Length: 292
Ligand code: PMP
Image (tube, rainbow, N blue to C red; front, side, top):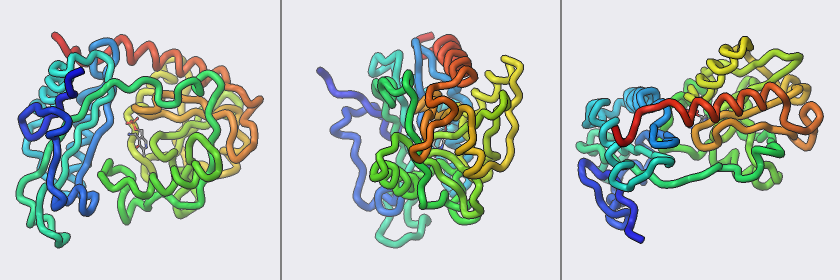
């Protein structure tokens, strides 16, 4: 099988050649930004929304992406075409570029732009049917006045620490609280709680402004279900009737246990089920065509 082609600063190079220097500040300091996007049935889901967030993340760290948004979209689509992919996970990455061992980003004149695309099926495999187990973690989500969780930066150490803790505790996904004890998000997804037929999700000051989160809110609204965006705590988590998480990689997944406690009756609930079905429908029927 031929190697996957990766977009690398305007060229499409085999995976083994898509390499940068150890002096790239993305590698040295996590100085850069990225996105995670999916394509279904030959269409890229919410392409403009992901590109907008990539550029917002870059702006937030004063990184100038050397492509217009239109050029970035075209590069993403062309990467998929070059690899003949119709169903894929896409990972655009913009690093600060090559500098010296100092922190100063002014020493990195040229950002490095990579776009990886590959097949990646259901992240949690068979667990969507039976539901995932969540565990709350002791590490707090980065506070918004230190490193805002709104920035999808190459520094995912906070999330990795949460994942390590979840792995140690035998959970499928970590659940973060913030410094104030408010519910934040999962290590790689946003969280929704359902109680007495009402849907709740935390405001995005302490989590990533998830594109799947926004889609879920829209889909629920289409079903006549309003999502209440408000601060939530551990009590709300433990007493929920249903919980689900949303993310591009994870898609929409029910959580049926948290810290060993069953959520509702310990099975994926009805509102979650409707949401997941609506999400599957919208992802497979809308989006930017890869092969126009
Ligand atoms: N939170 C975090 C920390 C994430 O990494 C992701 C995945 N990008 C999400 C939430 C979900 O965001 P989206 O739905 O835009 O993929």
